[in-house]
Image 1 (cartoon, helix red, strand yellow):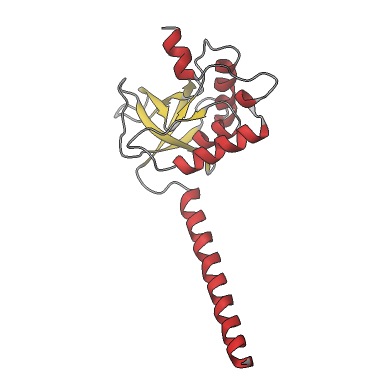
Image 2 (image 1 turned 180 degrees about the vertical axis):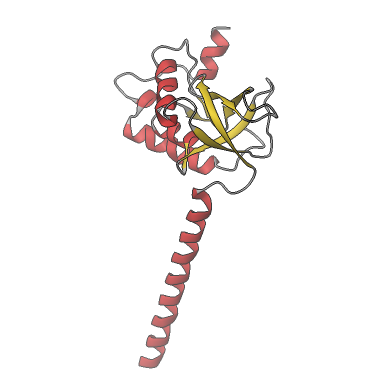
Length: 184
């Protein structure tokens, strides 16, 4: 009986170690961009969800608009949230002409011709950071779902912590989509 309990204990340890290793490996795979990447320089931040970058086309000084995948930030006319969302993204990016990595998902353009991308700087997913700071909503849009879980968790964090638009003293009353619809 004692030998059986020792064997069982060894098997239990092996299973726990294996589970921990699998968990660590899955976390590493999600933390850094892997494929479909492009290094560019940020020309300017257009809003809390859009930037203009240099270096995507054949001409290095040609600027291209990029829409961050999976988020919906307040419209610039949506006071005070629009300006705060833009400023928050500017702070995350830093000075003008900062280098960032764009990571693409299945659909690379939106209906307005903007490039759709996940934006990485210093191994941080900026799409996630802007949501975690409470300056954008997570909005999953098919077929681009690569980081939906991360973005959803970031939104849950912002809500629980009362960050940005989730601040109970001064919450955002309309979603960005509702605001744009009502103020066309």
